[in-house]
Image 1 (cartoon, rainbow, N blue to C red):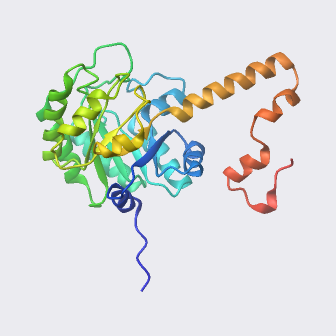
Image 2 (cartoon, one colour):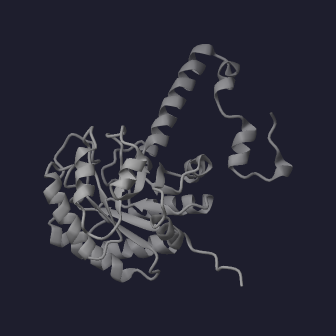
Image 3 (cartoon, rainbow, N blue to C red):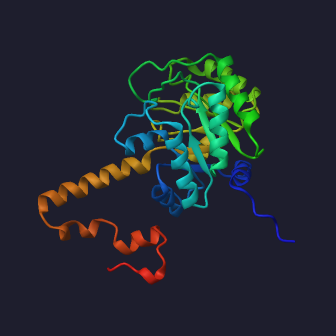
Length: 289
């Protein structure tokens, strides 16, 4: 008999067991998810930062669960890749986390990630204090989410912001071990350092028995293979697509405003047929050149 098609959560788990890093790219809608898929990445990161920025808002817990779930569902529908939903602090306490996990699970996501900062959170790279909830309190949120899970393959990723809060590798390790013991399927260790030293030290000392996740936004000189060898099975390029889009759109619109005619920017932008292809427009409705 042919092998049963695997679900996206199951496929993500299989990827985590592979010989290569699982590379996820930040997205905020179906189109950006499709661009990540076309580029050859293995997963989509439904980014809280990108969702907020796409609405012209700071990444500061201003959007709600419904908006996050709708965005993740749109990305899941647009691509064949597993979607990992960035859920900030889990939208509240243990019951909120349980409710959120059920919603994302039902709407097609393969995993959610919650972090151990207090609500409302502020983006990790903002110049402000980043207060953490007590370790035991966050572990209860993880346990509550896991008890609500109906698909055993759906992943709950625990994210510690101990390094972001300036508390050092020992505190990050202590928290991550507690989160793994609470049942987290993977641990994301976030850092805003311009060097990967703390991240690599954490990986060398990690003994928690679950895969690690890295987000090399500020320490971009490290290669994903080096992170993989240090125990990081998922590498998230969390906001590079959005940042590229802002640069590209700004450059094009500035040129268009100066030129006064569309022809002067046509050579540097996508064609209508290319957009129709990304939209999966039926062939009978080909765009004009």
